[in-house]
Image (cartoon, rainbow, N blue to C red; front, side):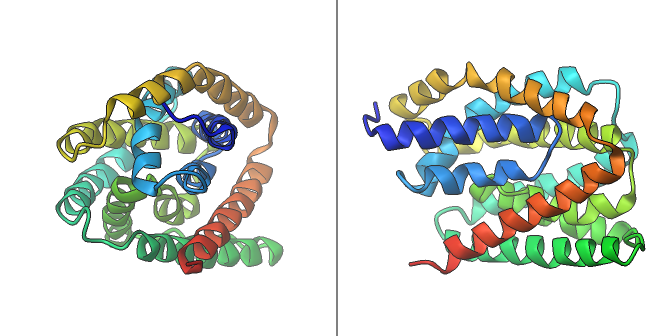
Length: 248
């Protein structure tokens, strides 16, 4: 069992933030693995977070079970599953810093474009199916490598202009399926050691609390403000990933 008090502080914050993200403010969950990586390896951080994230997904699905888009689930899911397979095939061969930098660039460029567009009082142009398929593959790949599928997914989905509840519910279902699919490959790669699983179990009681806070915040924030906050969070996440990727 990990004895470092700083790890447990980072882990509690990471789980709580992830719960809020899955409850209604998607995007900030990507901070979890980088935060835990301050004290342990990114691979171990990802393996500890996955079981906890699955518990959060169950609570999130219950909270948003009536609001989702079948169309976007059908569009995103196949490509994301292909991305997971690619991530599995190249696991151990892909530089994690490269993944952080790539995802960070997507997040920063997209969020800055969105924020500038908001200031100029113009809406982002919705992207077509080919962009959705490309984004879905990148989402699956980065989700498998470092649980960082949020930014490429949001880069495509936010401009679609969905109702905020439909936006959240759709993402909850997609990422629950992706997280569940990642379990067998993680097992085959030996990432679920006894210590990692026990650490996840200890952190699990925090999962529903974070999800509840996210759902509550989502209900309190008007739709336009919701997306503005989301743009800002994605920008912060992107900057954080770039810093981590370029820092030795």
